[in-house]
Length: 264
Image (cartoon, rainbow, N blue to C red; front, side, top):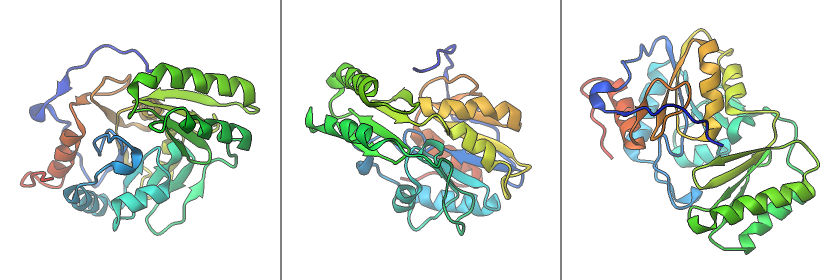
């Protein structure tokens, strides 16, 4: 469940985070709901050309210390942001790639059991608008196309877990999605590992995220000497709240230089 926190008013352009020293900062960015507007299905998100240009510039100016921190597998991130190939944490922390020219490393040696995977995938038969993403070490049950099915989806997931789960699992409720994952990894634990490796080591992490799976990153930022900002809703540990992904994109463009203005 989402962590209840005191309400924080969204920050407007005059209150955006102070400029980062790109020579000493590490930019860590969630993707869906943070960099990109949420779409009806995971496959239908749009990556604006201007965002690709901006991320490429910031990756260069931070000496490679810019990473995507996503629930999507890293191969999916590469497809979305092509031709960019960025450092990344994928699968909610199940995968990590420290640099563009390095291989993707699994952060968990386990996968969700076959019986459970098949039963969760079968939920699509309830309603074709329910989409089940199989990410190996996690599964995501999306119901954005059928919001009236929210309670049914949550009840069905709980019932399937009660019947078939033969391993410890964590369930998280996000924006029109139920994530089922192994408890041996998280975005927060992966970020802690990433920040030990060059070029991220000894830099100040600046994280932006929006959903329940991002809460573990906000939790580790104090120990890393970093700071974080949420999108659309207050999250415990966030220093401020961007009103929308568009505002996040505008802020990143501004980091490239005060003369830069974001264009879709």
